[in-house]
Length: 327
Ligand code: P6P
Image 1 (tube, rainbow, N blue to C red):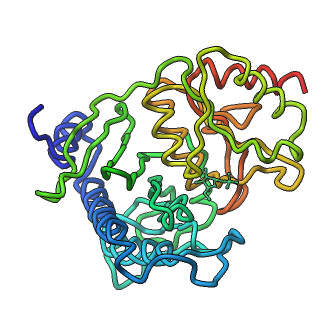
Image 2 (cartoon, helix red, strand yellow; image 1 turned 180 degrees about the horizontal axis):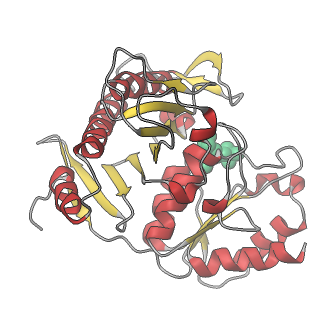
């Protein structure tokens, strides 16, 4: 396959969608640059003093890992200057970040989890950056309101993730299918490696942390039993959503994070985890549900709203929705 870079791929795509402006391509360019900077540090994490926790707790109530802080800082610094954004929201930041007036204002809003699954860093297991891109509703240059940002996932302009694993991959959709790019460290470019990714309609793996069995309701328990009883399913759980989702996208099956007594809204964040991955999975022919309906139809009540998540092959997600409909 000829070496097609992300930029070439986007310019080709941009020609097909005249409404895409250079601003959008510029946004993605700086997002990719951030990903390369994060990848470089992760690949040497053991050698630099960035392993382990900072001793701080974030807005999610989670112990902040050093690499979380570094990744968050890289994203905030780089993206505030990209000229395409008017606001950002990071999983690591309690409040909405409006782009400071000294920087060029754009019309896009970036929502991101700078380093999802970061507890895996210390044991050298995959982690990832997840991002969601929205277009603002208000007048260019006017102050961004929180209401403008709390959009349902179906209004995303683009979404994707960067997976830091044996190879570093960018998986991206701008609404014209899902395309995967692999970083060639030799040239420092993400090159097209997985054009037009499609998720199988059914099966191979179910992915869930079943240690919460005792907190689950009947629907969650019956959902797990459903997949355990299926012949050709195996269980896989990396503990990093990006890695579990990426395997599901490639091999088919389902990732589940059900609600439970202590977390009635589930654990995962709607805007920087569930919605971007739901956008991708639907673009690849799959489904994403909170058990009762389409994730992309949900309007988040606040920036860090959480949601249960059942995401993957359409037949597998439909099977879970049928079970939840009985409860
Ligand atoms: P648990 C990581 O903290 C994360 O947000 C996802 O990346 C991952 O899938 C999930 O939480 C793991 O949660 O409760 O199984 O440790």
